[in-house]
Length: 315
Image (cartoon, rainbow, N blue to C red; front, side, top):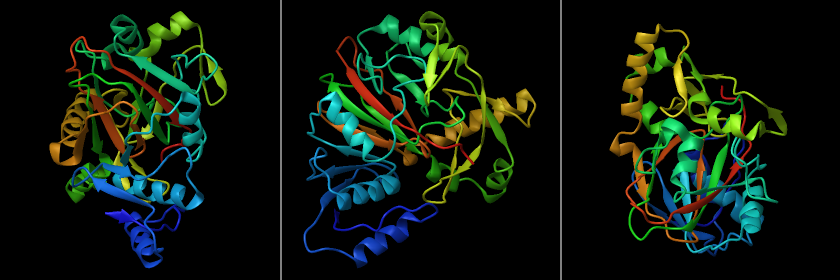
């Protein structure tokens, strides 16, 4: 499809309505091409230089991002400074990570070099697999205000493998029975980052998030079903990376329900798998997705850099 116009993304708006309004106010020349990657999630955006977006293009990209949940921009080859400047068009960058330091001189840019297997294991604990992938998770849900979204830059890509998988948590919630949807809407879940990051926090001494320092990771409690602040749609908001338990249930009940939700939420029909090329930018909505890294690239080199945008308290 070709996107020709946009109408902004005010809180509580519906993305289908945005697309209809965009079509109704279309301009003569296309802004860019959108190539969907699956039926439920993911698209490539082609025909843009993300270094030089005008206001119409920024709003149109945001509308596409809200609809597809994750969008990719091939062939951009940004510097870290250009990466950060692009991110600022869509929100306020946070520190690169609450615990792991960012690049020297650019703390908002968080780099993972997967060739440094021992460092990755220390940083990610049980989230990192022995094959150097990352299991399903939503970024940094163990803080009070998890990120709005993340913008990833593929720096070094293995010749084969190393794909990232994304899952649409709105579609996963919509596929549940109405009775289960209603029950889940009454529950909250505890998210805890200690199992993954306590070791590295002890090493570095202190972490930093949203301008505040801390020396220990306090659990955060979020609704099991959150309402998207921009689209008004509901999505599952639990993940095996950081969700500890459901607060209102006995632990055995919580474990059983979470095990079902974890399996359900990443069913193939809710997901897309993307193979990176060096220079590609990927931008995902952290409020309505999970993602995982396939650890199938053996000893090949894989390096990514990520900028994260400040989010709101889930409701």
